[in-house]
Structure formats: structure tokens, C-alpha cells
View (cartoon, rainbow, N blue to C red):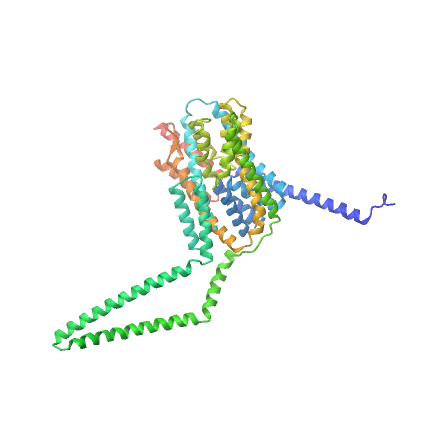
Length: 531
């Protein structure tokens, strides 16, 4: 009978399975619809990517709120690896799970990676220099990209910075990153921004600073009183001499200080009475509580559920540390390892220590690839100029370098590209997966939220640094393939301004203004050729 008529439990179980399948299907469909085009249309590098993600996932789709966006932005910037890729990965993982996050990562990174692989094949067959029109085209792309990144920096600053203190943190982080560059330097700046915010929010230095200011002002008041006493004494002596009056030395010594003592005692009594009233007033604590309450929405915003466990996050991070140690040890121990293994180890190390995203990866890749003799400086700079105009993560530039490394050392280009792709992306993605598990347990603590705000302000300052770095090497031509400042030619300044104004005031998409920049570059070449 049970074979013909299923029991109620069996019916419920079947319905539950069908519901799970439906939810999985809906999640996969939602992930595909929301993300399929991002890897093809997200130009401009991480600063512009963050702006695109905010518009899409916070304003339009409302997958996350403003607070969670700021948290993910801070976590992505504080961890090594591709910042915008990690953020997109986390957004989709929180929305539809791990499989959706991995699928989104592939949709996001593969189009640009395939494009850079195709570019490497073309560059490997070119001998000598490129035609000048190509250099003009690339310079136009770089100039327009600078304008798009500058706009992204301004708009992200307006959203992330809420008061003067965090404007100072952003300003100092940007200035410090401009003045010096090293692999260890940006992580130190990020941690410093977070720690400074904790100290500020908890008011650990407010008391000592106020005490120091009070001592300074009290000392200045004493000096002013003494000066006033001396001036009064001298003026009285002059008046006595002029009027012919006469006072004994004792009268002169007693009468004048009495006036100053009376004035000083009156000032002191008023100060003490004001201090006592202020200290004893019941409104003092209320005012301090109100001040804290005004800041509290920024420190303790509304929570957002993170369905992750700290144990799994800890296990993933431990696995990453072990894997990192094994890879680096094998490279140092094995005497005759292949070039491809050295390539993987170098890129895995770069992906582990790069904090700050795409703008930071470029000089480090030059050190780990070009300095090894695997890729020529000319090919590196050509690929760098074109990579700025490619959609998706800037870390795809490693695919270009990996393919050229393989070709130059007698290996298949596709194999080098895959090794480079895994080496540069794997550390950051593994770390962010583990960190999100721990973050779910820590994010509710006030000091963590204070640190997030400081890290977010400091990381936003790095975007302005990226604008400067690209500006300084964006103009390339046959005579200076290493690149020089776009400010050396007013035309590129016009291109940058056009991109900025077009995006900000006419709402043109970044791909459109970057294409306009490339066209303006070729127009400049045509005009200069005619002249």
C-alpha cells in the first residue's frame, strides 16, 4: 500500500527537494542576469568598478545595504589580491552562495583574461616598434581612463567620507602613498588608518590633549597677566611723574599690585565658577551622550546577516598559509625547477603581498617578471598601456605576461597564461573566502566597525594615487615607449577633462568616454601628421 500511496513525510520531503532545486535555479538565473555583462563592460580599473558595483547592487538591485557595501569595500582593500574582484565575489556569495560566487568570478575575469591572452600572441609576433598611430591610440585610452578614475575617486569620497576627521585620514593616506611606494608600505598605511580611527572613536587621546591645551592656555594667561601688570605699573608711574604727585616707594609697591591682584582674583573666580558649573551640571553627561548618539549611526549601523561560520574561515586561512609555505619552500629547495613553476611561485607571492588592487600590482609584476628576463621592457609597457583600457580586473595583465613568458622559453602560450591566471588570483580569492567566515563573527563589534571606517577612508585615498600613477606614464610614443606625463601635451589634458565631464554631467558610460578618448588620440595623430 505504501508503494502506491506515499506517506505524508515522503510527500513533504519531495516538496522540500523540489523547493531547493527551484531556489538553486532561481539563484543561478539571478546571478547570471546580474553579472554576465560586467566582465565585458566594466572599464577603468578598480575605482570605476567600485562605483559600478555600488550603483548596481546597492541602488538598483538592493542586494546589500550601504553599510555592508562599506564593510566589503574595506575588507577587499585591506586584503591582498584584486580588490574589485574580491568585492564582487563576496556580494554574490552573500546573495546566492559559494557556487554563485565562483561562477561570477569566472564571468568577471575570463573575458579580460582571454583578451589579454590574444594580445600576447599578437605582441609576441611583432619585432621592433609599433606604428605611431597605435601609440596615439593608446595614449588616448590612457588619458580618458585617468578622467574616469578621477571621477570615481571623487564620487567614492563623497559617499565614504562623512566628517572632517575622515577627510584628514583620506588626505594623509593619499599623500603618503604618493610620496613612497613599496610592497609593505600600503598595508602599513591601511592598518594605520584603521588604528587611528579606533583611537579617535574611543577618545583615548581626547583627555591628554585637552589637559595639554589647558596647561598651555593657563600658562599663556599667566604671562598675559604679568605683562598687563608691568604695563599698568609703568603707566601709573608715568602719570604720577607728569602730575607732580608723590608716593612713597612702599605705596608704589603696594598700590599697583593690589589692582592687578583684584583683577586676577576676579578672573580666577569667574573661571573657577564656570568650571564648577560646567563640571557639576547634569547636562554635561547628557551632551556627551548626545554627541556619541549623533556619531553612533556611523559606528553602529544596522546589521546585515552573514550566514558564514568562523571555524570554516579559520580552516581556509590555515590552508592558505600552509600552501604558501609549501610553494615558496619548493621554489627555494628544488634546484632544477622549470620556468613555469618559477612563474607560478612569483605570481603567487605577488598575489599574496599586493594590497591596494590593480594600481599596486604593476610595479611588482615588473620586478617579478621583467627583472627575471622573461619579458622585454617594451612588451611589458605595450601590454600595460592596453591593459588599462580592457574591461575586468587589472590583474589579467598577469595573463599577458605569463603567455609571453611561456612563448619566450619554449612552452605553449596557453599553458603559461593558465599558470599565471591561477598564480595571481588564487591567493586573494582563498583569503577573502576565509576572512568572510571570521568577519561574520567580528563585524558586530564596535572597534571592528571603527576600524572599517578608517580602512575605507585610507583605501579611498589610494584611488587618487592611482590617478597620479597613470597620469605620469600615460603618454607614450615612438621616442619614449616607457611613457611620460600626460601633462606634457595639452591635448591629453583635454581628453582627460572630456572623459571626466562626459561621465559626470552627461552620464556617459565609461566604455563610451574611453572610446572617445581613443578617437581623440587618433585625431591628434592625424593633425600632427598633416602639419
